[in-house]
Image 1 (cartoon, rainbow, N blue to C red):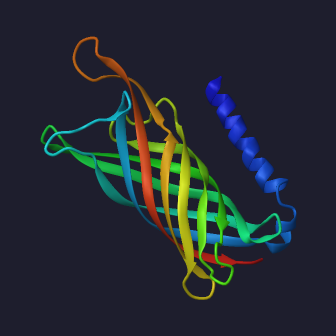
Image 2: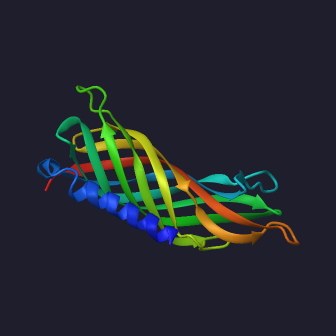
Image 3: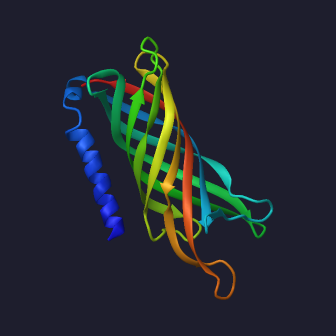
Length: 213
């Protein structure tokens, strides 16, 4: 029941922002296509502590990618505020050495981000970005495969700056604040069963093309 309530709250929040929160912005709407590399990680968490692996400790960061589509418009008729929403696909992964062999773990997410952009200096086209994303796991490979709880809630913080004409570059940090749940796993032989969670995060470099229809 708790999971269903969280999903419904997230859905209605996105629905309100997109369809009721900014009717003025429909006249100033821009479409975006973005993509680029991501430096990602998947960390096993037990009792709030990251699990360590042997030879040496890990897991390690891995370079993957993200792509997406979205829409952007002014927020509350303010020239220094913009609202962006859309849909992304992102792969997050890690690799580590465990018991003298290489182990990889990856998660493929379908993301629904909602972010606000703030331009602190009116004459400069540099925007700071902050917001959140609902990430639904569509595939998982490696340790324990698909977890019991197949979604995350992520925080987003970053900034964007112009390149040429309709092209921009964005840098953002995306980190889970609600983790994937692997369920009960045996950490050591015997009665030592614990709830294991996976915390994923990524550092994204996005190349963005903006256009109007």
